[in-house]
Length: 355
Image (tube, rainbow, N blue to C red; front, side, top):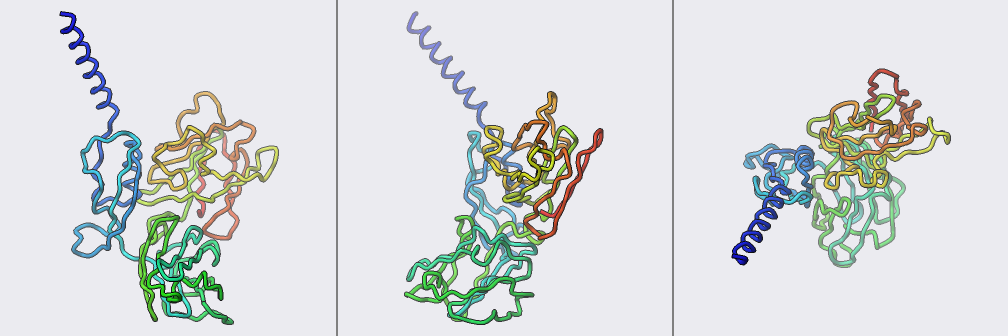
């Protein structure tokens, strides 16, 4: 009898453990046909993150719109643990190209918006193992403009029909940066963005290589604006679009309300939020409907001023809220000064500025 009771208890414990495990799982959604930003919002809402993103060339025969998801590594309907990730295959159309010969290489921005050059790296895959950081050209490249690099001394850039204007150019006689020339037997070079391989191009004279670069602006999958919604006791930075990223990396506001006027606030710095951060979301790149939520630490301030999916929250002292005074926004997409007005008591204030 004692053995039977023990077996029943063990079976009961196993059943409870199974039920608890089942309750802790979430169901993988079907992402087919979604854009990556929409998929990110859908996944993050379920407690799932995006893993590796692989591009596959889009054609008319693909059966889905361009720049949408064609396949996922975990089947829809599969139970997964919260915090899991899923790899995506995205049907892409090229929006950037490089045009080159054995002397020079030109990067052409066809994304419809600015490209952030920081994080873009060119690297020879064999031969001389040369590499070049695009940040050597500058911070960003405006739409329909080009950057150019030469392997020999020259007094100016050369024009191309594909370029409205050569925005940045340089010459370098450093062979360690001649990734495209074929020096040392190089036959291929890769183009990476934040460590992710975006293209592998053959060395050729002349050569042309097209690829897709995410986050290019209005013609790509990222918005060029930032959206603030706020009242005196709370503020939210909201991605109010339906299908685009809102990149926030490097975006700063100036705090003119704190005792030290003009202090910079990098509003999407992950270190600001401690444990109040969704671990599967990307606070520096808001998906549609997502927001960062700030409060003045008052009691009862639990919801953002407009509906949104809060992925990060920061409660700050009422004496240092940056929206307690007019606050300048340091845009990363243009060189113009922009200022949002102080919060108005009893009203919702909206401020939409170039990102």
